[in-house]
Length: 249
Image (cartoon, rainbow, N blue to C red; front, side, top):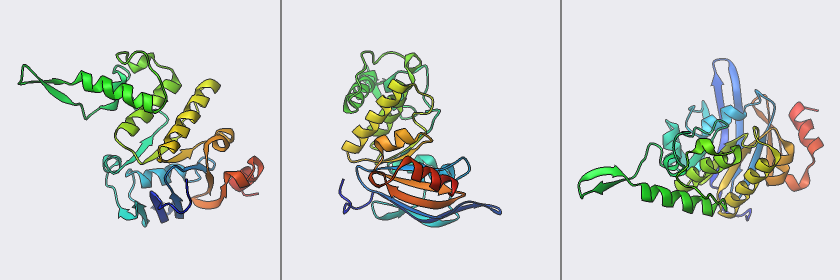
């Protein structure tokens, strides 16, 4: 990652007010290709408001979001997705009864013609996409025909990330991706994020777990009561300093 690379995402002076409540105030950040930026802060610090303003859930009250140097404004999360911004929430929004391929194509199922005229699901394409995407993430699944309800938490994260990668997400926003996982699974998710970095994607990593943040991020931005309390390069800071920024020491 070079600091001279054009940012994929630039957020400038973003604010979101709900009536008199200023959930986010005059916030700015950039993300370059192959960069992981952690967002930290207590509950109510403005992290969720920020990602919803970037990903089309909320319209910002003021400020701009640029993607590849062009201003963007999304009316829906689907518009943000179509432009390459994918949010992976804690609950993952996977369909338990479907396979990996079924989840990758959820709502955009590929069809093929049977007997030359009957439209049917293109299961071959779905299985191939599942295999290729998982291989790209260095995540090897033996059974592409199993429903994802059979999978562990880390495997399910891989499926959600795989779906974003398949649809060519440039920016992945990951909301507490390691929160409900055991240690081996947390490590797996951290290694998945390293894969995304190597592919030149940008990642916004939201976590309460400072160990995970330090393991995977290039920079950390701390929010407190809707404003930026500080930004540090991970190489130049400590857990203690980050905690002080979070609590306003």
